[in-house]
Length: 252
Image (cartoon, rainbow, N blue to C red; front, side, top):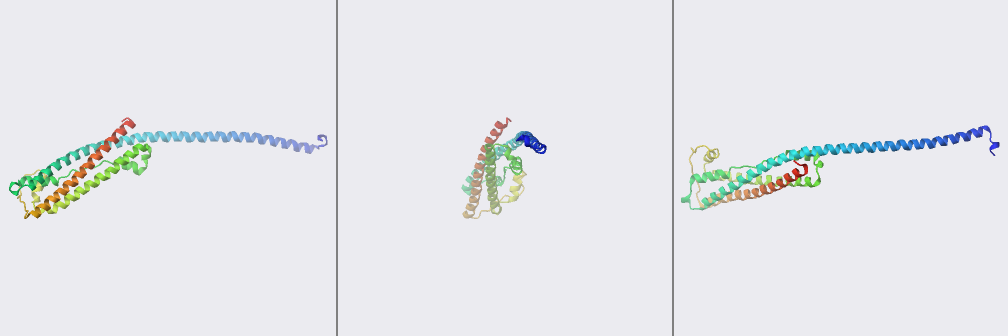
């Protein structure tokens, strides 16, 4: 049958065979190029991920150092705030004992010193710049979830601590106008700033009802101060645990 093929037919068959061979060759070449491109892209992603992981780990350590410095400042401030609150609580207890005693035994100077102590404050001012920055910038994701949970717990407790301080301050301010009708606040100002007392000291408590109101307002301040002291201690405990965890994870 091949003998009956014309030269044109034989040429067509040869062309088809050549095209078919070229297609097979091109398919293999395309597959090879595609595979090399896939490898290059995959390697690029891998290298980029490794680079990002390295940058994140390095940034996490820097942020951990900054967070640790903030927490250590908080620890010192909390320890001082606890000490002050405990001393103030004792002073207020002594002050209330004196007010419950017969008026003939009252020491006017001691009463002025006591009320001055009631109005003396030492609020805890947290150093939370690093955590706030990480939260707003999204860099908290650089840390593992367990550590983030501890950071969040510290921040949540911080809100409670600050809230309790605000309640104490409110109770003190509610006491101020009433106390000003009983005592000479010019004297309390001199005592607060360790100046010599040059003003007249007087105590204007006309009846038992006025005295009881005065005592109740002081008790309110003391009660709120006690709750604030509890929050200080919880804050300090959570902070200590967080400090140890950061030191352990980042070998600081």
